Amino acid sequence: MGESQGSSEVPGSFDGQGFDRLIGTAPFSLSGGIAENAPVTRAVVLASGLLSIVFSANRRARALGLSYQDIIKNFRVWRIFASGFAFQSTPELMFGLYLLYYFRVFERQIGSNKYSVFSLFTITVSLLLEFLSLVLLKDTNYISTLASGPYGLIFASFIPFFLDIPITSRFRIFGVNFSDKSFIYLAGLQLLLSSWKRSFIPGICGLIAGSLYRLNVLGVRRMKLPQIIAAFFTRFFASPSGSSSRPSRSLVGNMPSHTGHAVQNQLSTGFAPLVEPPESSIAMLVSMGFDSNAARQALVQARNDINVATNILLEAQSH
Image (tube, rainbow, N blue to C red; front, side):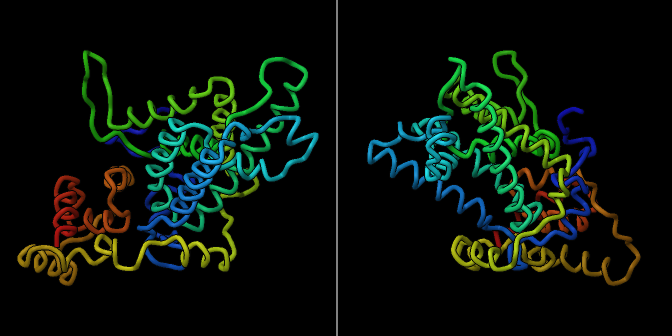
């Protein structure tokens, strides 16, 4: 099992069904629209940022973090929630929010409802594993408190990032090979080692939680949240309507007239059969920041030429 390449087929999708089936059937918002706004990611980023600032301003950041004494013996439940979202230091906050924002691509791919399940599952499982590690290490001097922050969600996201997001470019710096994904890995490594043992254990727990989701433990990938919860995220955390709707519009109407007529003729006459875009091409365009549904349309119109499809998407956004 290796990292996805831009020129090879993606070995598996974020939910294990393949980008093709996933993008074709998954809802792209909690109430049916395109999840351009990624409301779940927005909610997590806001909660993490605001809680971190509040605890830092009140000089209580050091009180954060999970410990055996506070959680298991004294049962301070508020610390579970606070420590699950608030970071203790500015560098952790910067790298953490950057990674959370970057990984919004997965919410766009599988839809906000399924991404909510992914978030709840990985955060919960990661916290349980952290509790277990505290219990196992309570009689040792190895560690007494774990770092706070949404480590579980962040590092669980590295599993689909490694497996599903293809490399689109490679380059060398001082003789060292890098790819467009390298900086995300470096940001994750920085966060993983930011507090050494205190942050390393939550990061590993997050990777395990992401792997369990990938393996579809308890059939978690088929689960969905109730519509009332979905509506809550859509109402309070989605961006204003219309602010990012351009990529979701029909691309034919946004193309130059001669190109648009040509595509329309192809679709209506039937002389140019439509070829289903490969998973790797869709994933590559999504990794560039384009909406998955728009990427699919562009690839169909471009006959799976990814360079032409990229130009179509860029031109559509400029109109």
